Amino acid sequence: MSEYQLRPSPGGGGVDAGAERGRRHAPVMVEEAVRFLHLRPGGFYVDGTLGDGGHSQRMLEADASIAVLGIDRDELTLQLTARRLADFGSRFQTYHGSFSELGAALTAAARTGADGILLDLGLSSRQLDDPVRGFGFRAGGPLDMRMQAGVGPSAADLVATLGERELADIFWRYGEESASRRIARAIVTDRATTPFTTTTELAGLVERIVHRRGGTHPATRVFQALRIAVNRELEHLEYFLAHVLEWLVPTGRLVIIAYHSLEDRMVKQAMRSWVERCTCPPALPRCVCRARARVKILTSKVVVPTRNEVDDNRRARSARLRAVEVLA
Image (cartoon, rainbow, N blue to C red; front, side):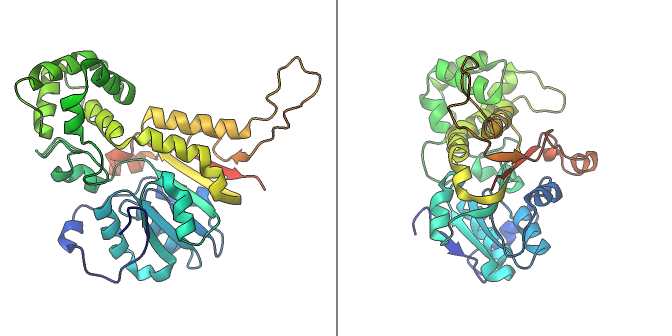
């Protein structure tokens, strides 16, 4: 099967149900997301980061007349969620790929545009808690971090091959790690004798250099930075933001939940650029650029989780939601 291909929800089977139990991801700001999407009867919506399907399920339950297309790069997660939401029948379909491939996904679904698109850019609890995936470091596992298994270089590959300056740049740019240079230098020194192949090996090295910040593990920022680099997350987001208005129908809505400051800044700047009007130099006596606003910003201030949600789900604490509506 092609990497990017539409798939109907299965009726069951094919996935170990035990792999699903006990690791369900709590969707972040689900009520806020659905409210800003403003579901319309008979509408077609895209959950561009399907994960465990919490947002999709809430949409499908909120209005029995809508259809949802769920997209995810993670094959196993896609299969588990398709099985869990199979009772919604043809109203729910999945597509294996990145949200940056939404144009191809719409074509596969025989759609010309969506009434609403949702992105939740966080990592699911299933991925974080599965040691085999290598996203976390609390349990030992291979230093992998790839969203799509076996596709592209792993985190271990980057740690083994990149130079000291390149590693430091990744840790600083994507993780805002103040000790980026010292960590990169130590990695290059240590790998000369023993390669880093597990999450605990890399986390142990970082712990030798960085002191614990409150309740946050010292390796958190390094692992975040490597994950972003391995999966080229900012590149996918940049492409998506450059094309997403083409994928929305007039008055369609876009809702994005970001967690990393770089991602949130990209989203904020893109949305602001869509409402900019005249870009002519001030010296010109009249407008010649004919620029006009393309969207209406729905979140004049960024929306954050409630205190109760953060208390119930610590992984929601850094979430930031922004939304726009395409002008007719």
